[in-house]
Amino acid sequence: MGMNVGSDSTTEDEGIVDINTTPLIDVMLVLLIMLIITIPLQTHSVSIDLPQGNPPPSTAPDPVVDTVAIDFDNTITWNGEPVAGDADLQARFRDAAAQPVQPEMHIHPDRLASYKVVAKVLADAQRLGVSKLGIMGSDQFMDAQ
Image 1 (cartoon, rainbow, N blue to C red):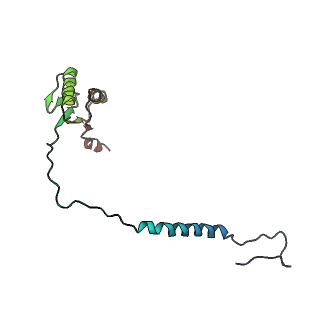
Image 2: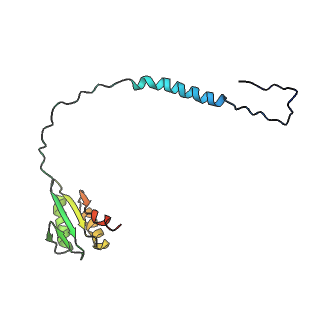
Image 3: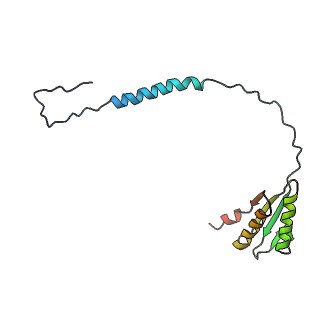
């Protein structure tokens, strides 16, 4: 590394064209120090006693799944049986929410079903305490793209 100390051939208007490498060296030293500090931490291992063998089969019964389908003409069916009206649907939601092990609810709206009806069914389910709720059949909407 050299330095220009006044010489006879230079004028005052001429600038220094050397790159200042001091910040680069400072950054490299900081990175080197961080690397030296972190390498010993990565070499430590933690011993864990993992269980051996196959786990026993689950004793819990298979989850009960209730399907609420909303057809293109906005008729609602519960596990394939038509629902008489809003009161019948709400009674079924209450019964499902009151069970000790709440069943999974699968809402299956048709592509042509009214949004208002689907939103009302979802709101009724939530309001009456159904917590395991899912919307099924979204693959039918993928074909439209």
